[in-house]
Length: 205
Image 1 (tube, rainbow, N blue to C red):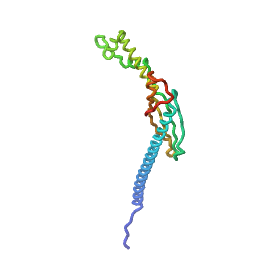
Image 2 (image 1 turned 60 degrees about the vertical axis):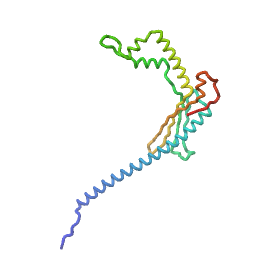
Image 3 (image 1 turned 90 degrees about the vertical axis):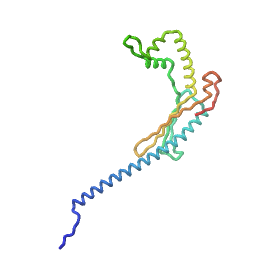
Image 4 (image 1 turned 120 degrees about the vertical axis):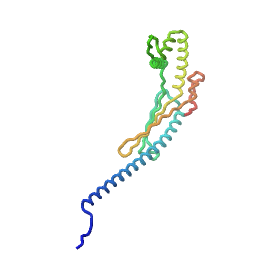
């Protein structure tokens, strides 16, 4: 009888191992592709919802005007059909450093060393040479007054809104945040003393 050629058990096991490895890599690649697609879909939805909510926030600021204290709110998008998404926003004033804080920071950054002859090096040399003179004191007082005016105008007319969207992808919590700055031009004239304080004012983003 002639012997029929065939695969040995070892050859079959090696082929199955190669096939299993290839299928594992292919399955892992497809899983990552699906996760990336879902991530992109969730991010796109979050951005669109954030834009819509920022428009609502702008309308609310336009109607109610700016407040001297922070405002916070939170909720979800169940009414819009996105119960998996929730939001929170916070509106706060933009706080700028005072004249003393600005001068202290400038002095700290302008400190210089001494050269071989014991003379202060730039930029500390210019600061040391100018310090103590009456002209410098007068100029500093004038700049300080202008800075305080600008500081008051910006703090009165600008508000920073921080808006955050939260959602769940499986068991993981994800979030997306965006910041927007809103200005009320009518507050500028009020802060500069050029107009009486109105009840409402036009709002420009």
